[in-house]
Length: 74
Image 1 (tube, rainbow, N blue to C red):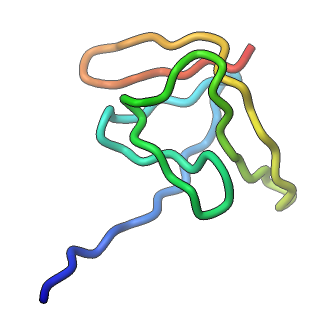
Image 2 (cartoon, rainbow, N blue to C red):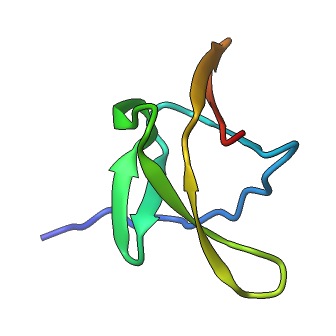
């Protein structure tokens, strides 16, 4: 049986927002992932800061830009 590999990318928050593709999986809890297109306002994502601390960020607004989804946290 063949299982496709998967890659984990680190994406930096810019101006307290995150821009991803709809098919990207976003970590919502440690080792729990959800497709970006299935996230909603009020959902919380799990982030790792530069100093290796972990935070939960609540999605306040969602914008669609071209073929990307932008999550705003403030």
